[in-house]
Image (tube, rainbow, N blue to C red; front, side):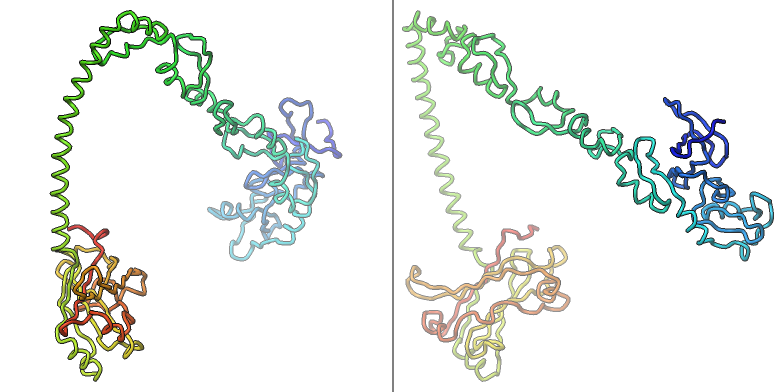
Length: 467
């Protein structure tokens, strides 16, 4: 066997691993490679040693370079940590001298020997492609991802594989997934899709199918060209809808119209009379539909008046209730329960005539709470419909009334479950406006008349579940 070239070690992928003296020719090259320079690890990572690999650094089972070696105490031979289970699987014996191995006492992890292996000098696995890197074995894995001669796949997934150094050139010139701009519409497309795109490109120039003298026309303008411009396009007579069935090229149509103007004028008059009759019929139908729309609007207005707000609460003996609240005898008054819809949420309003909490003695407080209802199992929870509470001004002139309204937009966060969740008791905790209106203003307008107060509650039904 010819001697190996120590100054420029080489390898063959076909060489027998760990077998000294064997060699094979590299495809397409006259160089040969001594396998004593070459080894692999368990993950098929290739090592090309600057000096021939000593036999002691080979695993006794797989004959690859040792990785995380363990040593047999009895004979001193070593194997890879990943090969040990196979040796111990049936009859624990050293693969070299067949000496028995005590798996509990005679197998030791040889960290120092691994450090010695890691310090062996290697060349880059891509040295035959031109990489000049060389360093200790332990540095190889860190180098390979950055090696410019490392084989990589196209990042655009076109299927090509090439050395990393050629990545930029591949993306610019060769990649089938390279993006380019259409020369006609300037849309960004893949280079591989350019032909298909040109078959549908709206700005791709096409010759007129009638071979007129206009020349090439963008695809999206071709329809208008044929309908309105092309002198070679066959078109019907302008009086076609009136009964003339003549057709010719656009350039000849004016001659046809000029040859028989009386006939065309008669057709036009007949069309005008016919269309006038149709317009009269349509006018009568429009009038009928307008009357129906007017009736429907009235019906909607009447329904709104009947079912506008879900609760209009009349509170009698207002002065007495304010007195009770002021003295602390009864601070809160409850409305009759009501439903947000025919089969909706059951709710109740509460009012504190002399205020609640920190607002006591300063503000009128109004609240609402969700009660346990018979349709709760069918409803959506937590309750999330907007609620508007309005204190009604009882001024005799409706146009002059200045109502006070407070709108609540429920926040369905976890912390508000006690207010908005499905009731587990008779009713949830109340929520609303502690500072609804200053007590001074309650008596300043006509909110109280004949010792009566009206307050209404409206629920936004836009997102209400329909049952």
